[in-house]
Amino acid sequence: MLEVADVATAYGKIEALKGVSLTAEKGRITCLLGPNGAGKTTLMYTIAGILRPRRGSVRLAGEDITGLASSSIVARGLALVPENRLVFPHMSVEENLVAGAYQRRDAPAVAEDIERMYARFPRLQERRQQLAGTLSGGEQQMLAVARALMSRPRILLMDEPSLGLAPRIVEEVFAIVETLNRDGVTIFLVEQNAHMALRVAHHFYLMEQGRVSFSGEPGKLAQDEVIQRAYLGTRRPG
Amino acid sequence: MTDVIQSTLDGLMFGSAYALLALGFTLIFGTMRRLNLAYGPTIMAGAYLGAYAFARTGMGALPVALLAVAGAALAGLYVERLCFRPFGEGAAIASMISSFAVWMQIEEAATLALPSHLNAFPRLAAAAPIEVGPFSFRAEHLLMLLVASLAAALVYWGLARTRFGLAVRTVIDHRRAAALVGVPVERTLMLAFVLASAIGGLAGFLIAASEAQITPMFGMWATTKGLIAMMLGGLGSVPGAILGGLALGVIEANAQWLFGPHVRDLVAWGLLFAVLALWPGGLLGGRDGPGAAGHGRV
Image 1 (cartoon, rainbow over the protein chains, first blue to last red):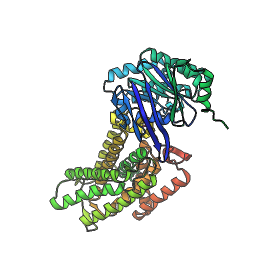
Image 2: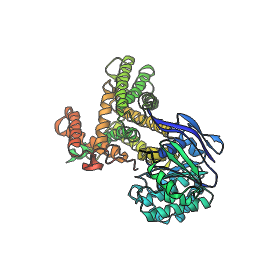
Image 3: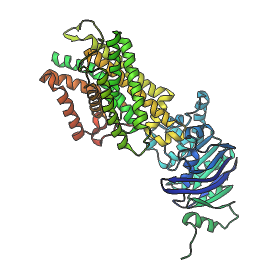
Image 4: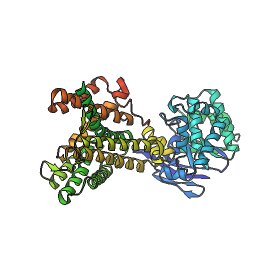
């Protein structure tokens, strides 16, 4: 579904991604783990069209989307739940959901989808007129996910959904990830919380300092070593 | 007492044009997070286009109005492409300085086209003043209030109910999030800019037509009035712009009645100073500082 090939992205002179290649298969949950500063968010923003890569390519369902504007990429069925949620703080929960469906023209179906989101996330329904900026972290995460789903994406990208959330809420979030996937949504997930991510992933990659350093299935490699490298990076002698 | 009410009513009517000026300024600030110093001059470019056509052909008020709005919108597009688009997120200062430069450029061009200081402008309404009880209203001012109110209501409705309005509101609230939900951010910014310039063009036409004349000072005048009204209402707030414009009109009118016409601009600047010193958030933002009121909440 999603193929990233040798993508390099830089901020001025600083190369954050030094040639990243990975694949997210249709219908599965693929995770990208890695310590802070590894470049995971840069990769997500590059795929979503917020940043332009210096080289390499990104393909979505076979189509080259490298360098396209973010609005074109959303149109092609990719939605990103960004790091730190980025809800529209001064718009209500409901307005956020409507905004998520910005590109859609089928108003009645959009209204139905909003009701479906409320059924899936009852806490959002309770707060439907409330300003999104006043929601708790966990509620904002649900809203960010629901907003991304409103565009009916083929693939859902999630950047650190557990960031800053209490353990109980993190469990809820990952339960939602699993449910969505069971309903057929392809998911590409970036996480620092390797423990939770490895519980749901079908396949995972490890990223360190702008490069993919490992690719495999949970269980194939000793959990401890993976988690250690995900949190701390590769141990270097001396 | 009657005089105070008369002044207040006059102030409200003239203030409606200030409100439109502030509305355009605010739309640009809210979306771009930058001050467009060439705002007044783009309005003047439209008004001068109208004056030029009027001088050459003697056409009526309505075609001149259309020309003024179209001229301002085109000038706004020019400013947006030149000053605000190429610089991206970081270079706020560069954008504002280049808008200052374009201000000078447009003023020069306008005075080259119409060299005389005073240029005739078609009258907005030729009717006699209307008397209602003890109060007297100039027909131009009533028409100004009507047109400005309609325009403001249309913009308000547009922001709240149309797809483009949703795009503008998302860009104002959180630009990156807007990009992530698929809003075409660059195009939205450009269209908002042009729309804001067109609104300013309408305000400029109303003001010039009510005075039946236009001078080269108009650009600077429009920028400052729009800026003051916007700060008074609350920087970046759409309802604040309208409130600020009306308030500015009322305060100026009463000051003029109390102290004479030469005091108008002094009072306006004094008001700006007072707002910045004491209530930086303006009427809707309070003491919280500039920008406290402005979040695109319509």
